[in-house]
Image (tube, one colour):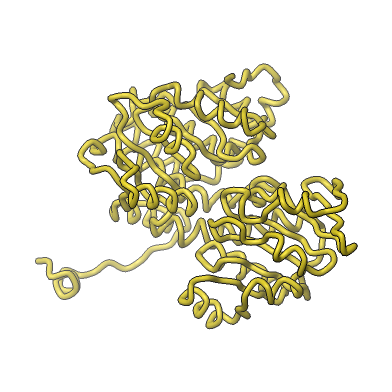
Length: 414
């Protein structure tokens, strides 16, 4: 099932993407040098389910070159890039993935990665955890724990913890300061609109954009929509987030009121059934629907297809639907994560920070993970600080430091 890197042209294209990304990922490069020195992951087996594209490939290669055996699979069939997989496989990483894999193939690929009986996992959305915990796949006595980097995955982990169904430690990389403040806000904000613009070739200025969810990802999507000249409406269930959206200058209202007004709809809630039949009947003619949440459950694509009198491929990554009313609606990337399924994902420099966090959390697990209790753990503050300081250094930015007197005044330290 592992990708055979036998196509030289495919492999070369993948290498070009990986090299371009690596040249803009100085933090991950520094982590690689640190891992080789610490030898923390040498001899360890790491299974990762993550969007398989060039930036992810550099994370896998960083761990592999530090002495780990890496088994990689995708976390979304439409975000997998076959040329990157071919290049990665030729470098010695075991890859189980292909673009456009069926649901059955996708699950088989996850199981194949876990057949390595890993010491540590890197999860993106919680699918590896589900297979380990609920189906007993891939777990051995040497298993330590893992890392999760998405809002959706962390929500699933916290639900498991409340139900006492998480029996090993998982680092909550998503909520690390150097992740959600930058990856979720600036990464999602730029990459979602990059994917929508290149896919639709439609004008955003003067349009009405409805953003469902005002977490860090929703903040980024809304901010970039405003910058493109759109009027932005935010829908929320959290009253505090709704107030924040109002004070950030956005209009807030229920989805039922926003539906007839919107030209573009972007869901970023981490929940399900955000745009369904109740909303479909209210949408204006020509409404464009996109999902930027991890799973393809926020826009109810199956019910949209069932409700339509006909559907057709309107353009690459755009499916058109004619409703009984005669209105036409358009769904991007099958309702999957639009910035990766129809684009290249977050900017390289943003993911350099996120993957540096991931790799350092893997190092921490390898060194002291057996001392952690089962459950969800925050990323250690020193890891966040390490990444932040080196990011500033890569930007050529210096900052002040406390004097001894200031440290004593603030921290009570001598």
